[in-house]
Length: 251
Image 1 (cartoon, rainbow, N blue to C red):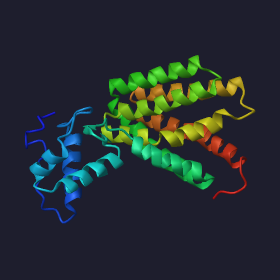
Image 2 (cartoon, rainbow, N blue to C red; image 1 turned 30 degrees about the horizontal axis):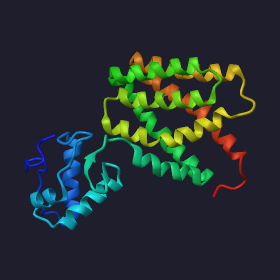
Image 3 (cartoon, rainbow, N blue to C red; image 1 turned 135 degrees about the horizontal axis):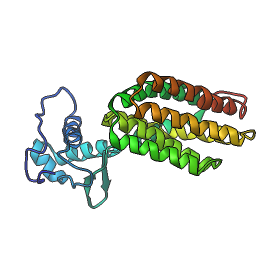
């Protein structure tokens, strides 16, 4: 990070037609996303921020509060604010509340996830970023190793889909998929808890993931797209049917 006394950290002018605190928070957020402030870096004090932007300390304090509220920085009474790694955690919390609220919200969230990942898998097969491919491969191996273990499968499944996002090389896509982890966890756990799930069913699920990985690894966009649709038909839709049996009402 550029030294906190260096006024070039925040490149902005307070001329936007909005509250001053929002303009300040946007300038700091831009520095976070641009990498001028790295995860773990200390932010300037409220007084320094106020001085750099020519605003009052309460305005600077409100700007930091806004950034903390969306999970971009960590604040603690009596300590300097620090930048957090940019993840989908805030969105994940929102989706978590939604999918546990009703079956309707769960179905809607799962439809959203299918739509998003249909595009993710195509881009992943086109770009095949090595770190993402390695994460997918490791997740498939974890599924094999934990065959028949619902908890292990759920965690490996989440890692698999995060690996797909990383294989796109797009940090915003990675954050979006991270934000959908609560949806995936809910669906995966419901699917894995089916009382009639046989060993062959477990093996078939792992093999579908393995084939999807191979399509991405080989750059076969059409096959990857076909496999992601097959994945949702066989796994997520089935789990929602299970969820439907757990309650009579949607809302």
